Length: 227
Image (cartoon, rainbow, N blue to C red; front, side):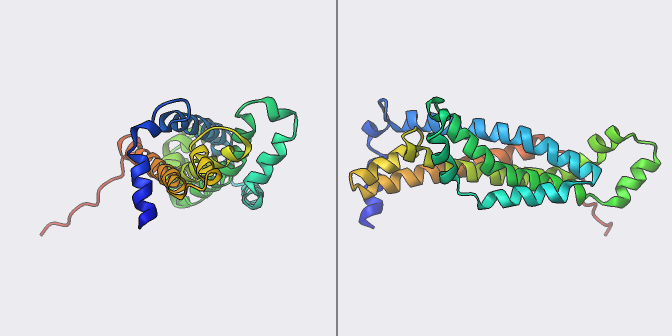
């Protein structure tokens, strides 16, 4: 309980939120690294997963390979990049490591979502004379959308939580607050940093849920039977 009280005191101290090492600066760094990694991972994984799911060929191999990537320690990948020529490339090593971490859930959910579309609906659309592009855009993609969004939300939370490792190789982000607490044996600061990361992940997931509600394809409401 004393640690939680100390963490609350740290979070409510205005001096910890301002300055070059303040929370707002670290939050901006964290959002930048996580956002770029998610955009790149989505740009790579979603088109490939959706296309393979539409074709129904080669997807199982791609999904198995991407799932095998989950077993690769992200910190080990980051440490490897930091001893390579990429060390002087700013946040690039962290972004690459996070992209490798984010691709598996995005690719898997996109492929599975396309393959789980009811085949009878697909065949009916083909029977109506729809082309491959029309079938993909008007039938398969809207039906696969919920699972695709689930993968995006899962990847977002994982990337935001994992981006804290950037601090362990001297880069920015909210992880710097945690590592600074470890270096000074300040447990309340460590807890405060962890709380900030957790709150950020929850807020991003809530924002994606809101976007899903506002912009996602409308799902028909079940009709009420007449009484």
